[in-house]
Length: 206
Ligand code: TMP
View 1 (cartoon, protein in one colour):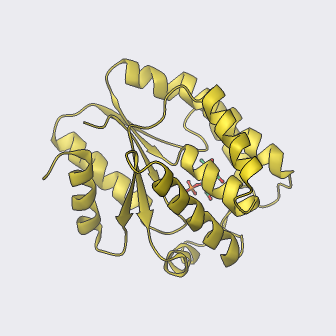
View 2 (cartoon, helix red, strand yellow; view 1 turned 135 degrees about the vertical axis):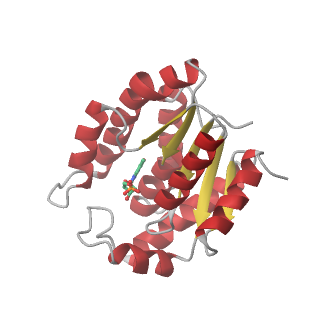
């Protein structure tokens, strides 16, 4: 059964609600877990997150990519790997598939050489991929309408719809490339419907 689970999707697909519901279910089952997020999840990575999400920050695309991995390296070392070593489950809000989708497709249009660079960074700096990744799939326009109601937009949320259409394509690419790990979940249902589908994928329900 899955232990390290990441949750992915474009803006406003209901990730936070789903993660809270999965966390509540694990608690009910008496399963020991941690809940964390990327970019961030450790003290240093949260500092990088603040920089990465600040709309006032301007940086080169390669800098953005490398900062994602700088944050991830610390998060893995300080938080994820120790938790897994202790037998805890890890629920992670975003992980490497977001890098493929946002940096690889959003910024670089799915440029094959750039995707190969990201793959290399994953191979070199990510000793453990999630056992399972939940990709919450919702039409980009619907998600963006939900995200806009949240108030102040961060550096990524301020992007144009065409950017998110490419990000969405990036997640679809990942799901197609690694169908064993990346599970596409239709996010258009109610929160409980989405939760039930995810519990089936994890192996709690048949
Ligand atoms: P969140 O607002 O869903 O917590 O995610 C933070 C933002 O960071 C989100 O817009 C996606 C972006 N991001 C990347 O661009 N690349 C990455 O590798 C990760 C983990 C997140």
